Length: 187
Image (cartoon, helix red, strand yellow):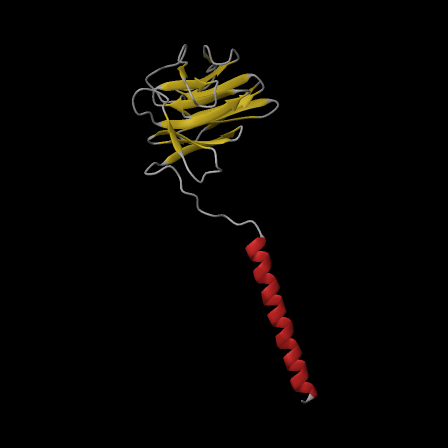
Protein backbone atom coordinates (compact mmCIF):
# COMPACT_ATOMS: atom_id res chain seq x y z
CA UNK A 1 0.00 0.00 0.00
CA UNK A 2 1.42 3.35 -0.97
CA UNK A 3 2.00 6.17 1.46
CA UNK A 4 -0.68 8.16 -0.30
CA UNK A 5 -3.21 5.34 0.17
CA UNK A 6 -2.26 4.97 3.84
CA UNK A 7 -2.78 8.72 4.39
CA UNK A 8 -6.12 8.57 2.65
CA UNK A 9 -7.20 5.55 4.72
CA UNK A 10 -6.05 7.28 7.92
CA UNK A 11 -7.96 10.42 6.90
CA UNK A 12 -11.18 8.41 6.30
CA UNK A 13 -10.77 6.57 9.60
CA UNK A 14 -10.30 9.88 11.43
CA UNK A 15 -13.38 11.37 9.73
CA UNK A 16 -15.44 8.30 10.60
CA UNK A 17 -14.43 8.51 14.26
CA UNK A 18 -15.31 12.25 14.35
CA UNK A 19 -18.74 11.60 12.82
CA UNK A 20 -19.32 8.82 15.35
CA UNK A 21 -18.23 11.07 18.23
CA UNK A 22 -20.44 13.93 16.97
CA UNK A 23 -23.43 11.59 16.75
CA UNK A 24 -22.86 10.49 20.35
CA UNK A 25 -22.64 14.10 21.56
CA UNK A 26 -25.79 15.21 19.75
CA UNK A 27 -27.73 12.24 21.12
CA UNK A 28 -26.62 12.85 24.69
CA UNK A 29 -26.90 16.66 24.64
CA UNK A 30 -30.15 18.23 25.85
CA UNK A 31 -32.57 18.82 23.03
CA UNK A 32 -36.16 20.06 22.83
CA UNK A 33 -38.68 17.28 22.62
CA UNK A 34 -42.41 17.47 22.15
CA UNK A 35 -44.58 16.55 25.12
CA UNK A 36 -48.18 15.37 25.05
CA UNK A 37 -49.88 18.57 26.26
CA UNK A 38 -53.42 18.69 27.61
CA UNK A 39 -55.58 17.13 24.91
CA UNK A 40 -57.35 19.57 22.62
CA UNK A 41 -56.42 22.69 24.60
CA UNK A 42 -54.40 25.77 23.75
CA UNK A 43 -51.90 26.42 26.58
CA UNK A 44 -51.87 30.08 27.69
CA UNK A 45 -49.83 29.81 30.90
CA UNK A 46 -47.40 27.31 32.39
CA UNK A 47 -45.92 27.20 35.87
CA UNK A 48 -44.12 24.77 38.16
CA UNK A 49 -45.17 24.41 41.81
CA UNK A 50 -43.62 21.76 44.03
CA UNK A 51 -43.47 18.51 42.09
CA UNK A 52 -46.28 19.56 39.75
CA UNK A 53 -46.48 21.35 36.45
CA UNK A 54 -49.65 23.40 35.82
CA UNK A 55 -50.99 24.39 32.41
CA UNK A 56 -53.62 27.11 32.10
CA UNK A 57 -55.52 26.47 28.91
CA UNK A 58 -58.50 27.40 26.79
CA UNK A 59 -60.29 24.44 28.40
CA UNK A 60 -59.38 24.98 32.06
CA UNK A 61 -56.49 24.06 34.31
CA UNK A 62 -54.43 20.87 34.05
CA UNK A 63 -51.75 19.39 36.32
CA UNK A 64 -48.93 16.99 35.52
CA UNK A 65 -47.01 15.10 38.20
CA UNK A 66 -44.72 13.32 35.72
CA UNK A 67 -42.94 16.24 34.01
CA UNK A 68 -45.58 16.77 31.34
CA UNK A 69 -46.02 13.16 30.20
CA UNK A 70 -49.67 12.99 31.32
CA UNK A 71 -52.23 15.58 32.46
CA UNK A 72 -55.19 15.66 34.84
CA UNK A 73 -57.94 18.28 34.48
CA UNK A 74 -58.57 20.23 37.67
CA UNK A 75 -61.89 21.75 38.63
CA UNK A 76 -61.28 25.44 39.30
CA UNK A 77 -64.98 26.38 39.09
CA UNK A 78 -68.24 24.67 38.26
CA UNK A 79 -68.17 25.70 34.59
CA UNK A 80 -65.41 25.89 32.04
CA UNK A 81 -62.90 28.62 32.75
CA UNK A 82 -60.38 30.09 30.35
CA UNK A 83 -57.04 30.34 32.21
CA UNK A 84 -54.86 33.26 31.07
CA UNK A 85 -52.20 33.50 33.79
CA UNK A 86 -50.68 31.51 36.66
CA UNK A 87 -48.52 32.54 39.62
CA UNK A 88 -47.06 31.01 42.77
CA UNK A 89 -46.46 32.79 46.06
CA UNK A 90 -45.35 30.60 48.95
CA UNK A 91 -47.79 27.70 49.16
CA UNK A 92 -50.48 29.54 47.18
CA UNK A 93 -51.21 28.98 43.50
CA UNK A 94 -53.03 31.79 41.65
CA UNK A 95 -55.05 31.29 38.45
CA UNK A 96 -56.05 34.36 36.43
CA UNK A 97 -59.19 33.56 34.47
CA UNK A 98 -62.03 35.09 32.49
CA UNK A 99 -63.99 34.88 35.76
CA UNK A 100 -61.45 36.55 38.04
CA UNK A 101 -58.74 35.21 40.36
CA UNK A 102 -58.86 31.78 41.95
CA UNK A 103 -56.46 30.70 44.69
CA UNK A 104 -55.46 27.20 45.78
CA UNK A 105 -53.60 26.46 48.99
CA UNK A 106 -53.49 22.69 48.42
CA UNK A 107 -51.63 22.31 45.11
CA UNK A 108 -54.73 22.66 42.95
CA UNK A 109 -57.09 20.29 44.77
CA UNK A 110 -59.52 23.06 45.79
CA UNK A 111 -59.96 26.66 44.69
CA UNK A 112 -61.49 29.83 46.16
CA UNK A 113 -62.59 32.90 44.21
CA UNK A 114 -60.76 36.10 45.21
CA UNK A 115 -62.32 39.03 43.35
CA UNK A 116 -62.74 41.63 46.10
CA UNK A 117 -61.69 44.96 44.60
CA UNK A 118 -61.37 43.73 41.01
CA UNK A 119 -63.40 44.73 37.95
CA UNK A 120 -65.13 41.40 37.33
CA UNK A 121 -66.02 42.19 33.72
CA UNK A 122 -62.41 41.82 32.51
CA UNK A 123 -60.17 38.74 32.49
CA UNK A 124 -56.95 38.58 34.49
CA UNK A 125 -54.16 38.53 31.91
CA UNK A 126 -50.91 38.41 33.93
CA UNK A 127 -49.32 38.13 37.38
CA UNK A 128 -46.01 39.25 38.86
CA UNK A 129 -44.78 38.25 42.33
CA UNK A 130 -42.39 40.19 44.58
CA UNK A 131 -42.05 38.86 48.11
CA UNK A 132 -45.51 38.69 49.69
CA UNK A 133 -47.01 41.06 47.10
CA UNK A 134 -48.83 39.68 44.11
CA UNK A 135 -49.56 42.05 41.22
CA UNK A 136 -52.11 41.37 38.50
CA UNK A 137 -53.00 42.91 35.16
CA UNK A 138 -56.64 43.23 34.31
CA UNK A 139 -58.48 46.48 33.57
CA UNK A 140 -55.54 48.26 35.17
CA UNK A 141 -53.02 46.96 37.67
CA UNK A 142 -53.85 45.67 41.16
CA UNK A 143 -51.92 44.19 44.07
CA UNK A 144 -52.54 42.17 47.19
CA UNK A 145 -50.30 41.66 50.18
CA UNK A 146 -52.89 39.78 52.21
CA UNK A 147 -52.58 36.46 50.42
CA UNK A 148 -55.23 37.39 47.86
CA UNK A 149 -58.14 38.26 50.16
CA UNK A 150 -58.63 41.64 48.47
CA UNK A 151 -57.03 43.58 45.62
CA UNK A 152 -56.06 47.27 45.54
CA UNK A 153 -55.79 49.24 42.27
CA UNK A 154 -52.55 51.12 41.56
CA UNK A 155 -53.50 52.98 38.40
CA UNK A 156 -52.54 56.60 39.18
CA UNK A 157 -50.74 57.90 36.08
CA UNK A 158 -51.48 54.77 34.03
CA UNK A 159 -53.03 56.31 30.90
CA UNK A 160 -53.88 52.99 29.22
CA UNK A 161 -55.73 50.58 31.52
CA UNK A 162 -55.74 47.68 29.03
CA UNK A 163 -52.90 45.96 30.93
CA UNK A 164 -51.64 42.69 29.43
CA UNK A 165 -48.19 41.85 30.79
CA UNK A 166 -46.34 42.47 34.06
CA UNK A 167 -42.78 42.18 35.31
CA UNK A 168 -41.22 43.21 38.59
CA UNK A 169 -37.62 43.68 39.72
CA UNK A 170 -36.04 45.07 42.89
CA UNK A 171 -37.09 48.67 42.25
CA UNK A 172 -39.89 48.80 39.63
CA UNK A 173 -43.12 47.25 38.44
CA UNK A 174 -43.49 47.21 34.65
CA UNK A 175 -46.70 46.86 32.67
CA UNK A 176 -47.34 46.55 28.97
CA UNK A 177 -50.69 47.21 27.35
CA UNK A 178 -52.62 45.82 24.43
CA UNK A 179 -51.58 48.85 22.38
CA UNK A 180 -47.90 48.09 22.99
CA UNK A 181 -47.30 50.85 25.52
CA UNK A 182 -44.87 50.19 28.36
CA UNK A 183 -45.10 51.82 31.79
CA UNK A 184 -42.95 51.62 34.93
CA UNK A 185 -43.82 52.37 38.55
CA UNK A 186 -41.32 52.67 41.38
CA UNK A 187 -42.00 50.23 44.18
